[in-house]
Length: 160
Image 1 (tube, one colour):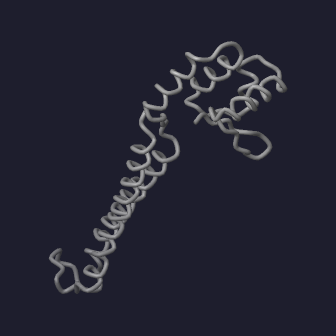
Image 2 (cartoon, rainbow, N blue to C red; image 1 turned 135 degrees about the vertical axis):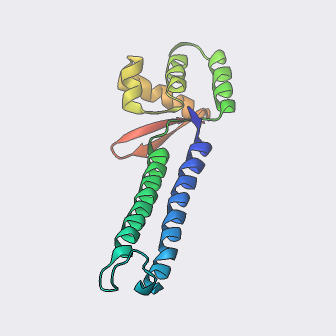
């Protein structure tokens, strides 16, 4: 797992590199348009376009590279698994040591999921009923151990 801030910066840097490649390729488009066919060294007449084909291929290769870079940056931002900072995990483990019973089971389940889980998923993983999990979460939220955030029709439970 990669820390969240590193994955974010890595994705942004890759996207910026893609944009720079596009700007670099576009900077040559003016030079290509201004160069006359009289400079053609392939022996063709000015009406035939020997250089235009190679320029077109080079531009498309440049744009393809830029597109691949930007797509990779987006994939890194979206899909790279991130983990919370190590100090959070140490803090969570210290809190678990002080707990007992069902609260401990709920808290351990949340720490195994890197501190974020939907409440309905928490009900499934702990094997407790909805009401019991809701009451336990109420108590833990009142003590400042976690927070519930509304996400559509369900709650995301996030450890602090």
